[in-house]
Amino acid sequence: MINGEKFMDRPLRWGMIGGGKTSGVGYKHRTGAQRDAANYQLVAGAFDIDEERGRSFGVNLGVTAERCYADYHVMLEEESKREDGIEVVSIALPNGLHYEATKKALEAGLHVICEKPLFFTSEEGEEIKKLAEEKRKIVGVSYGFSGNQMLLQMRDMIAEGAIGEVTMVELQYTHGYGADPEGDTKNPSQQWRVNPKISGDTFVIGDLSTHTIYMSQLILPELKIDQLLCMRQSFIESRKPLEDNAYVLMKYNTGAVGRVWTSAVNCGCVDGHRIRIVGTKASLEWWDAIPYEVSYEIQGEPIQKLIRGSDYLSDACKADERLGVLHVEGLSDAWANVYRKIALAIHAKNNGDEEALAKMVYPDIDAGINGIKWIENCVKSSNQGSVWVDFE
Image (cartoon, rainbow, N blue to C red; front, side):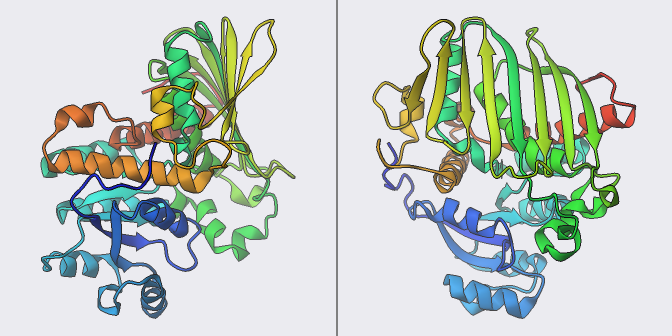
């Protein structure tokens, strides 16, 4: 169980690129990193494209004015001159800016935690992976939902054969908050998401389903996608060529099949983030609206509800517990778990402990590259008329 104790001599000196006052994700990063104060200390930032607004915001967060920078290029240069300069940086910028910022941060000798999807192309991902290896630095990806510990319970139960052989994987991440076309011009956090120059080749496939695909791979590490077929729709015409709804069919290396539905126009839906794994004996289902619970459904028997914090759960699941049974955890705790695991990875990398690093389960650079490949293959299938393509 996590209780906030330190595992390093001191917190990592941490900076942020983006994540300012108008950011939709900045606070998630800060609550995730600083939930365990022994892991990260926010000491610098280039928070905003508006220098004065960024400085004012940073000071209100407790960062000294001199370390609230006009842009991240200045921050990286100035922090490198300090004995107490930052050691790790989080990148909370629009998609099209991830690659350059990550590369510059690695070249400055920093560990990186970056928003998803990581970059535009898998070639960029492989280049950054090589650079990170040369610099001996960690690149983590903020798949925040993956920190829900009940996903580890599903992983362990499936590995132990509790549901038999996996036959079907049903994934959904949908909401209705993109159903109003006026949001494309009036909502700053939505404007760039529907601009291909900034968001890349997709809207909801990159913005939403990359989360769920990574979570499914966390649960099912032995299953690899062999082929997929993607059908994309732009129900709000002005968003073309970007999709606001998509269906993807998948074939896995084991013979299992899967389906993904991702949408920003599922009108009335507030939280449609679900994962259902079906086996030959039973099924497991998790829903983000009730993140502390997994439904265990054995064919011919009453449905069981597995609740986080309980003694009967697996060791890996209980290791990520924070509040104990009866007390509800949520997305902030999941983000904190992800940030903690990345801090553990950084600590292991800094100390040359590759053996410990190899055993860690967290969203690393390979997870980020696989997310890029997911997007690339979905776009390839869709653009060819929604045909089956080999997952490359």
